[in-house]
Length: 317
Image 1: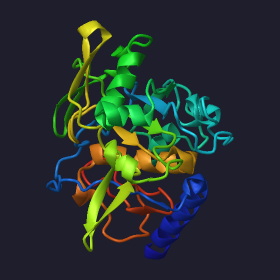
Image 2: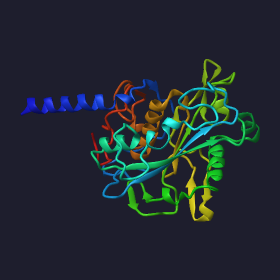
Image 3: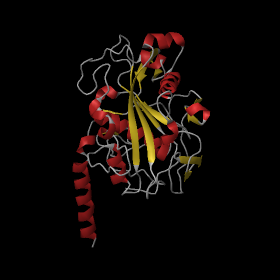
Image 4: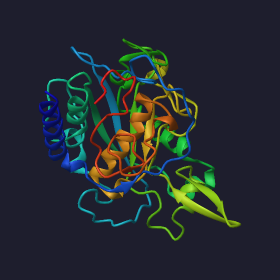
């Protein structure tokens, strides 16, 4: 019996590894330091539901963002300048409806397989070019939160956010199907923050997309891969005051930010899975403690594969 069990586990790991080979990217995920939360004992997602089945779903708004003055690799085939990343739009990254049931390794497919069918995540994709240049945002004193807020305010004129309000976030590990007047989840994906500038890292820090650290008396600047919030910019009213978007710090908030679209779709999905994982699981205590381990909360993600850190989520791998 023991031999059979070991064989079945090995067979499962082998098939799933091959199944999700598309997630093999080998890029380190860099993010700001996070709070350490207590390890949960109860099932269910921490800041957003981890069970969405039997007609229920989590619907996400995905916004692909390009800075107006972005000049990094302007003809890059995956995401050319001033164009939407066409291969990434719609079902390229996520299903748009519950009944599509894609099997193309997009994020809907990922969460379906990893949750054993208990977690349906769908969404819509939009493309935005910022109103201002990066130099203008710095001059205006705008950082990531204010930039995200501006973009979402502009989208408010053309879309209804009601379709992204399907869960009542009552509190930690307490989520009920039904609206609560707050948008559930937005994923902001930036093409490039500052790779085309003379001081990459420094500009990211100036704009709230990175950090600086003192090293032997010298400031060292770095850009994050992602962060589990929309940038600490308070509450935005949308849909004519009927709904809000919480752009506050990590917690029961309305989204995440991904800063490195230029690494390609595989890395985009890895970082989204990781940062969204903070909403499902928790803060720094949810991270794997060693590099190279497989899982959504690994610091280095050679393959986003097994959801073994979903301790209290009700779908442990």
